[in-house]
Structure formats: structure tokens, C-alpha cells
Image 1 (spheres, rainbow, N blue to C red):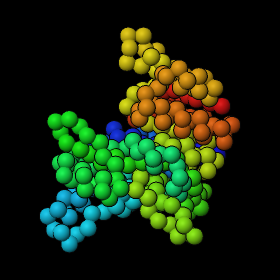
Image 2 (spheres, helix red, strand yellow; image 1 turned 60 degrees about the horizontal axis):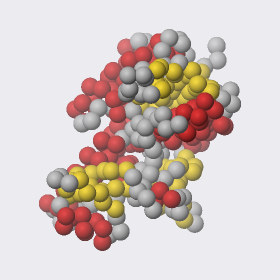
Image 3 (tube, rainbow, N blue to C red; image 1 turned 30 degrees about the vertical axis):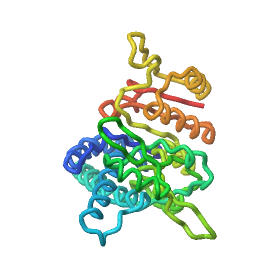
Length: 311
């Protein structure tokens, strides 16, 4: 029986928001992922890293404040750190869950870089808020460095970084080789480490990449049968959050575009997931996208929950 190749995108709920909460959360996540393996899926997994990369950035910045000889870590390094420790927790939890079910299958994390365009408009209008609250003096220091900050009245200032569109996944051939060997691969965590290619040299960019955007690209590059996006709701809704909200069990890519044009999806939550679905389907006409919650994962693959989007 031919395996179904799928990229699975995990959101914040699948990981928790602290190191302790993450260890507990990934045990639950591992059960849902193992269910998919038992359903004959070959999985390539990507995940969010917002709280994790923020925590690392805060810690490294504070370390520099206390011990001046330690330099603050740039965003690309913080992203690499978050990929490593989130991947470590996921792969260990999933490996243990699979072995408990009598399934012996390698689970590997690949530290993944993703190229971005240095002239992407996102660099001129940063939107992703990261790190700790700063004083006005610290904020002015960041501005002098060429960084962007955002003021929160009564709380202070926070760093804001760009979220450019991904161009190429540098380690895609390594990811493909493991996927084709029927291994479980964790890659492009947190959207991947954003890098700019300059004369064959990769230089880290002060940015983050939207994890849903990279999930859509990764699924297309691997020619996966499905893109599965886990989020905090059981399905996509029209008029979400109102008394008229209506669950959508199925959509075409064009219907999804019409709903985007009508302002149905909130930026930063459902909108990037729908955009990722369209991006994937534009390149994979016979593919399908499934959006649901972790709790309904098994029901969703059996057509009993979630939203299915097709070309």
C-alpha cells in the first residue's frame, strides 16, 4: 500500500509556551502524530517557534546586560537554537510513542536554513514582535543599531522584526532523502533560519519566516499528497467569532481566495494558513490541505472533522 506523504504544521498549542509546558505538550502531540503514522502517512513535520525564539532572545540579551563580555545573539542564531531544542523534544516524544506501539522508525531533526530576498518589502515594514519589554533608553539604543521597536503604552517597548517570504529551502535535498527513506523528518522549524545568499555565502538575516508559509512551500517542494495544518480550532469558519459563525467542511482554492478578499480571515491567525494552502495547491493540483485541531486529527483524516481545501 502506497504511503501518503504529508507535511504537518504544528502551532503553538502543540508545543506550549515554556520549556516545562513544552515537554508535556509534545507528549500529547506525539500521540496525534503517531496516529497518522499508523494511518500509513510518511510525515515531514514543521512547527512554530514564536514563544521559544522570544524566550531565547530575551535570555541572551539579559545575559549580555549582566555579563558584558557575552554578546547578544542575533535573530538567526536564536532561530537555530529554537529549532534545535524544539526538534529535540518532538523527536524524542514521537520516537517513544512509536516504540510503545511497536513501530521502529527513525525520527530526525534537520537544522534548516531558508533563503530570503534582502529587498523583500517586509524588511521595510517589520511586523513580528519578539523579545522582552524594554525601557525607552534601551529602545533608543536598538533604533540607533537600525532595528525597529514598537511602543506599548504603560509597558515599554519591544523589538519588531521582518517576516519576509521564503525563497529556497537550503537543506531540501537532505529532507527529501530522509522522507523518501520513510523516516519521520522534523525540518524548517519556526519557518527556518532566514539567510541571505551573497556570492555563495549564507548570511543570517534579522528576520523570522512565517511557519505556515514555509509549510506550504515544503509540501510543494516534496510533492506531498497532503498538507496538514494543526491549529487551535477544529475547522475553518466563516464569520468566525460572531453569532453567525459557520463551519466550512470543504473549500476550493478559488473559494478560499474569495473569502480572503472578503476579509474573512484574521492576519496572524487563520489568514497565513489559508494563504499557505493556496500556495501549495497552486503547485500541487492533485493535493489536498487539511486544517483542524490536534484533538480531532484522527477524525479529520477520516473525513469526520476539519476543513479540506482542494485546487
